[in-house]
Amino acid sequence: MDDREEVGQLLARVALRDAKAFEALYHQVASRLLAVAMRVTQERAMAEDVLQEVFTAIWHRTATAAPGQHRTLAWLCVVTRHRAIDLLRQRKPEEPLHWRSDSGEEQTHDVAADGGSPLDQLLSHADDAQLTRCMGTLETEPRQALLLAFYEGLTHNEIAQRMARPLGTVKAWTRRSLMRLKGCMEAVA
Image (cartoon, rainbow, N blue to C red):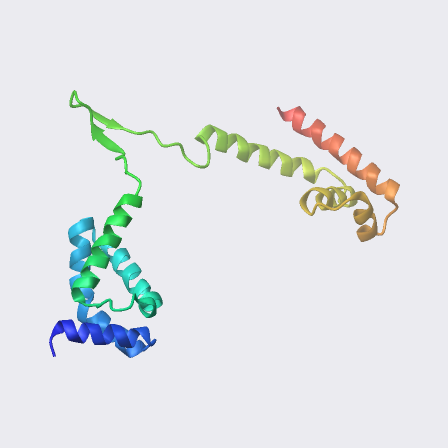
């Protein structure tokens, strides 16, 4: 039996969801299909992605072949080539971070950091430290009421129930605590 017949028979068995036939097919043709994908993409990682997509499609769609369609190694090579071309077309062009201008000068792109500038990070850290210090100046129960409101998102009624305190007391604690925090934060700034 030649390769063409063997690949055709394996594909027919794969259509019947024969996992052993799928494995045998992979071992028999994967290296050839990878070479086809490499010729088109010129990148091993992309070629491996193409190969994975082709074999996934084979497993899921082999049963839906058109009547009279002969599936052979040549057919698999064509499918692989087309999948590689499709992947290249979908790929966004990449712009290098370093390049040479027409005058020969080396150029680079400036990429903004996700965390902001070092000054912004320092100021944010200082603000966090100041807020922590100011929170420490509040009495225990008013501080707890404020934390429940802002970190857990509880309403005044829910805070009053959780802390077993009157609603008016919780509202007063929250208002006064916010005013004290504002004064403390402004005193440093």
